[in-house]
Length: 215
Image (cartoon, rainbow, N blue to C red; front, top):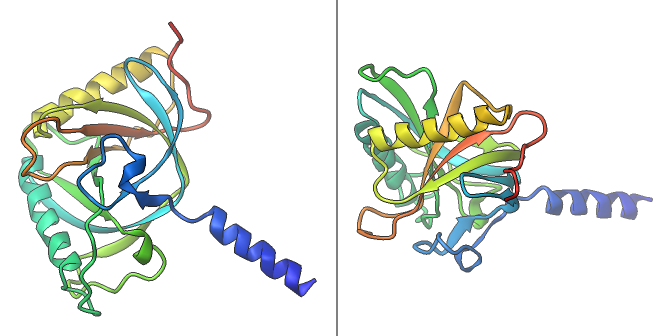
């Protein structure tokens, strides 16, 4: 009985482990060894529905009138963390994507706080070294379904606003339920990549996801 209980616990830990794995499994996450992986539920011309298993991120926040400035500041904090500014002095591989939590109620010409997160690689999903910068923290992302809209080019403040509004308009037209307090702006590429960039906007599904209508 004890043995069976142990097997059950082991299986449970395996099935709930984050799917952070080899980037070869993704067609657009190609610049890092590992990427955040997902299960595609359904897709259409305007958006797709994905399922993500729980995963751990390391997060820094910054405030600015412009998303680019805030995210750059937070990004550098996180970059210093993965390049050795942690209690273990460990060098931690960069993964993709970079996930930016963006408030829905931000004003066009108002300051806003952005939470920028790096997905921790598989080796550090369970026991990452603590940051030496006390403003950096870990967060556990839940098991979730998300509505996703993909787009190319550079993720700028205005571009991100346009893309999130386009996705919202589509979701509202089909009466889909989603979190209206915030969304995620998601980037897969380094600043060095000039072409064929891949960005996304995510809204967390509430209730049952609504798939795009089939043509």
